[in-house]
Amino acid sequence: MLVDPNIVLHDNVTGPRSGRDADEAKFHPGQKVQLLEDIVNDGTYPHSPIGTLMMPKGSIGYVKSMGDFLQVIRVYEVHFFGTEMTIDSVGCREHELEAMEAYVDEVDEEMAIMKAHRERMKKQREERQ
Image 1 (tube, rainbow, N blue to C red):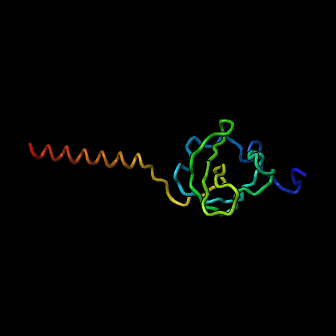
Image 2: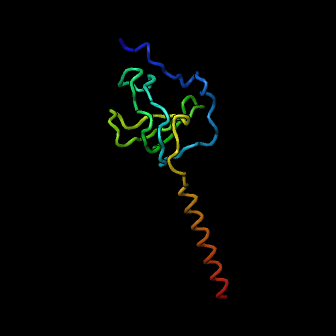
Image 3: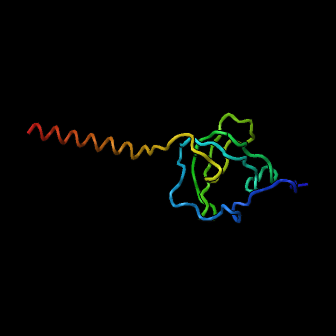
């Protein structure tokens, strides 16, 4: 038998949480996240049967990248460490993840540091004149 009829799958396309995701992403590359529910193969992973546990609830990983499914559903590629699972990267939806740390945009942070430095340099030049 290819599919166990007793396994309940969640259809991410037509299910109740399938509406368009918010314009702003909830998670970002490099951010540490934890799974809020088990991830099972819904048929999108070709190397295991539908219904196979891909990653258990509570697993901790880092967002590698994000993309869109059907141009409306955001999917995060999350790399999980230290699990006994066959694979270590899984596609996850926002409702399946929880942030384990606040996101810090390193580019914005660096720009703020550079701006403050330029202001100090400008002030020093003005004081010398």
